[in-house]
Length: 331
Image (cartoon, rainbow, N blue to C red; front, side):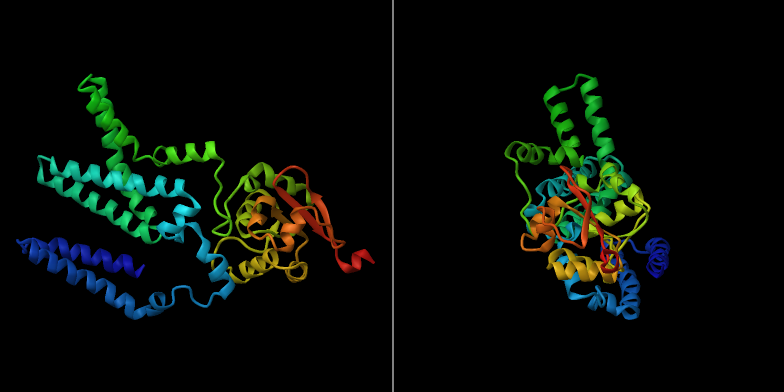
């Protein structure tokens, strides 16, 4: 809220004061002073956000979850984990920056050139930030439709007018490259042909295990607290009457730590966390256990049977679930 208020005030000041500053050097100095006037108070008030942005999260949450969240990966790690996500996110921004810059250079009206130059800078900044953390794609992509839409319109008009077909098709190909799915298409095709899979241990991928049809199999089991992998939590909340121990929200650090411990450790770890919840059901995705080959969860997914877990959802699907049998119930 403070950032919005300070930023709005700085923008208004720039509009009114900027009329008296004719040279670009003076205007750049004014922008720097106004930007510092926004940043310095916020850093003074909330220095902890810069020095320790993750707060007091447990080490297991930092190491085994936050460090492997896809949007926080650097470009080299993301290329190993999901090259289609990188190409589908960064390439459209880069193409959009080129298109906006080219449009700015060819603009007949100064205001249009300025607008397109700002769009090009915004998109280029998104590419730069995404090289460090993929989350940089999100903010910059808001500007992409303002470039992609006119580019597609221009290419289609050229085709309809039967102008220079080679140039028209080249413009259309470039404009289509601003669409994430199109930019990622070459990698997706190679993956489909080669059967490529992401390396284990980088991050867990959302699979069909978390879709509505799979999770709906747990509805008939009656309301219970479910101990399940973190990324399965939102689907369970949305599509079933169950409560959950964890979901991918860092403020729920205790639940995330408990879930990571349960599914990466021994039988004793899983049982302890299930009883501490207390959980009535344990659920997992068979494919997600491949990254933890030494864990009890992996053995459980492979068919291991224990007295305190009664299978309730099994078979050929990826989703598996067990009812927790309490000690007093067995007696």
